[in-house]
Image 1: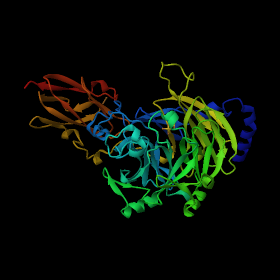
Image 2 (image 1 turned 60 degrees about the vertical axis):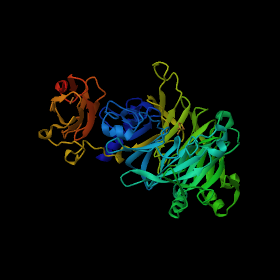
Image 3 (image 1 turned 120 degrees about the vertical axis):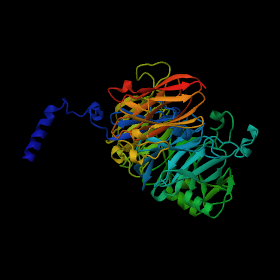
Amino acid sequence: MKLGRLLLASLLLPTLAGCAVQKTEASEVYVKPGDHDQFYAFFSGGHAGQVFVYGLPSGRMLNIIPVFSNYPKTGYGFDEASKKMMGPYTWGDIHHPSLSKTNGDYDGRWLFVNDMPHARIARIDLDTFTTGAIFGPIPNISGLHAGPFVTNNTHYAFGASRFAVPMDGKYHPLDSYAQTFDGCIACMNIDQKGNLSMAYEIHMPPMDFDLASSGKGPSDGWEFFTAYNTELAHTDLEVAASQHQQDFITAVNWHAALQAVKDGNYTLVNGVKMIDPAKTPGIVYFLPTSKSPHGVDVSPDGKYICASGKLDPIVVVHSTARMLKAIADKDFDGSWRGIPVLKYADTNVAEVPVGLGPLHTQFDDKGYAYTSLFVDSAITKWQLGTWKVIDKIPVNYNIGHLAVVGGDTVHPVGHYMLALNKMTKERFLDTGPDYPTNAQLIDISGDKMRELTEWPTLGEPHYATILDAKLVHPLKYYNLADNHADGAIHSQSEAGVTRHGNQVDVRIAAIRSHFKPDNIEVKQGDHLTIHVTNIEQDTNIAHGFAIDGSNVDIEIAPGETKTVVWDADKPGVVPFYCSNFCSALHQEMQGYIAVQPR
Ligand code: K7E
Ligand code: CUA
């Protein structure tokens, strides 16, 4: 019976070609209304300070996660807890989302992102899709561009300084750059709860670290960094930092670094254990690589370290095995600033002629690599091992990063690839002089790359990372019984106002469709600490709490408590209301604070 049906279906198929069953680019990205996407794509938002979550393959935007910037929609940056987490800054510049891993594959626990200008790393919890912690500013690091890159079991995160500065924090003339400025590589511990702490740092010459990649398999235990400006220029960098025909990949043996810390081979610099690699050999090596490299990417099997020199039309591939042999043989080409320099001919196994302006490389599960070309506005597909260029596809326009599903893991999935393009023109309806960036989705399952769709993106995405939705199990709501937040209540009967002098503590219950209490009497000069608990235990019932004429606006998920402060500085009557649509009588969800004159 079943067989008969199958036969019938296969006979019918050719006649249906051209109708709905024909596989087209549109049908491949079409997700029927009500159906779900297969993947989450987490886009860094650049200096929007946010992470944007899209579904793939549809390209539909699912959510915005505020990280370093205020976001009134969720009240992030408005309640006391998130304000404290954000510290004195209301913006950040996110370039590199890095998913937590177990044995080199994504595990769906956390997403870490960097804030370059404040040298911070944030952890986004993937059970709630909210920012759970912000770590930093990291001491001795200025411009955390090369970060955060987590190791295969999420025990460590690495970052490095893009802008060298004097570590002593003192004034030094800019023309003493080469002598008095410092570069730095930082290693942070990540504990079982995803919290970061400083492990150690490595004092480096003042070159500009750019990107990093964690070793895998035979290169596990190593972290590889690119850096430009081995010229040690401090002015006119576009010319001055492009003089050398080769720059370096910095290879860090982090097992050796941990041992050095154990052995006490460090000094404390601004509270951090600082290793001097010139005095403690065996930790840092330089691999000469192509001119002004940007991305460095380790292949899924860990055998190859691929560097993209922006100013060379090649990807330079180094062999892990040959690097390890040269190190074991102490076969060095001298040293630079006390750090051994390996011989290019020893470690280099290929120069792949990918095209102009190579930036970043991703990998698939069939032994192919994909390199983004900023100048060519294209992606080149090439083969690991044979080093043959297989295919090239144009993108619109200047591409920065590209992202394959699981592209930085040990098991990438050769299905979808994102091109994250920068300077898009004429692709979408004009909305004024600020153009959107452009994401293009490319099918890489066949020999030839095929563009499927594109859509405008928010902020300025750099890297994006793509996670199988099966690995994430988001909370439906917070369990009220487990809510032990400051000022939390568990029923309407616990709501109320308490006073200690002019410190007034208000505990408000929010439940469809009222606040309790909704009439609050205070005196001029009172300082109010208002805890709002959404005591509902149901899905998709968030309440808002906003005070007229103020900067108070929060959203409280079911089972959650948020705290705001408000000063009753002049007599009068001030309304508050629920700012998030929650029910038929949402509009009625409002109240007053009456302020009596002193
Ligand atoms: Cu290439 Cu900041 Cu990773 Cu932008 S970075 S593209
Ligand atoms: Cu509660 Cu609207």
